[in-house]
Length: 206
Length: 206
DNA sequence: AATAATCCGGACTAATAGTCCGTTTCGCGT
DNA sequence: ACGCGAAACGGACTATTAGTCCGGATTATT
View: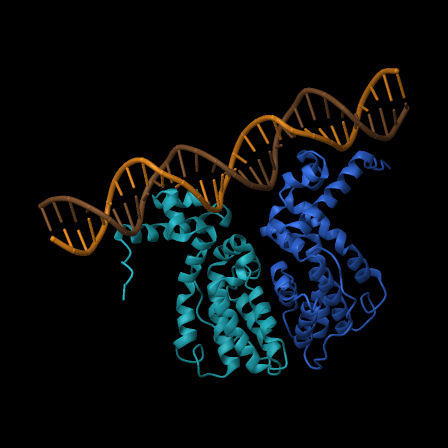
């Protein structure tokens, strides 16, 4: 059934090099210095290679983000409760926000850069749509009287790189996530317990 | 006491021309075609003039936004209840969100362009800070148990140009505002009445 | 009318996204 | 081992745009 020819080894090597170079540049300076020229130079490849692989700036950052969040997505889809199917909506929601929050806190710079690059089509990104569908379903389950579609967007809107950075003081790396969970709990109504399901501190870019 | 020399008449004329040209370009194409070259050309002035007046791209868009929201800000500061001081927090909040929502619905393109241009320093913008302080105070009043500072950011994060556009179908121009009000009500807890204080339809760009 | 403060305009620089195509490398079939 | 077509490479090239700069024009003041 005409299986796609596998990726050539040089292609793989270069793809990795480019992603790695991007990470490195993000970690060093702000998301601004990550020009694709620089990425290509640091990765030791030509500019054309970067574009052939990732299409454009947004694609590159998206790929990086995708890499960082694949695990969470799989866990949500097929993993054990409370992240995966089976647990009550409220618990799944808090577990999910914990996971997404950890990613955001560990990759705030990448997040900003991605938002900047996406501009318009942010809402068409498959990754975004997955998160949105998931949240929307959980919200609809917990509060069928509210506009779950909108609220899911609202919750995701909070995962703005700059906001995350601003809400993440050095001495309290999970502050952001706690606040998001508290907000979700408030939206679901009643029982405002907070701060459940906190994982250990993440450790990524800045 | 050394009163600042007033703005020269040519300066005033040009400032107006530039703002007007910007509006026009925003209305025509997406926020993308609004390059400062084009603005200057359409306004019939040199590029230098645009930059001298507004500092940079962000400043220009900010000025336009400021113009569109000055009225609301004054009403919130000194106007009669429920927008102005005196009414219960919940009522002030819904009235405020109605006002801000109307501005957003009528200026979604401008909003996107501004966000794009601001990037980092969005949270230092005096206008943003004013809205944030206001919301934060109202939230703290209604729900002293929650993180009002964060929730105010969260509510404002929803005023994203692209999201507004997506949540504003042609046949229901206030859908976005209603959803935001519903969300605010849910956050304040209890009594989920919705859709109070809707003004007539706005009529601005696109 | 003279003069000084202010403002104007558009050529110029710099940065960067994205394209293009001649050249090189890879891996499959023989 | 070898040859050949497909795939990938690289970096010069284009296009766009934000922002700077300064000689010259305009405005207000006396």
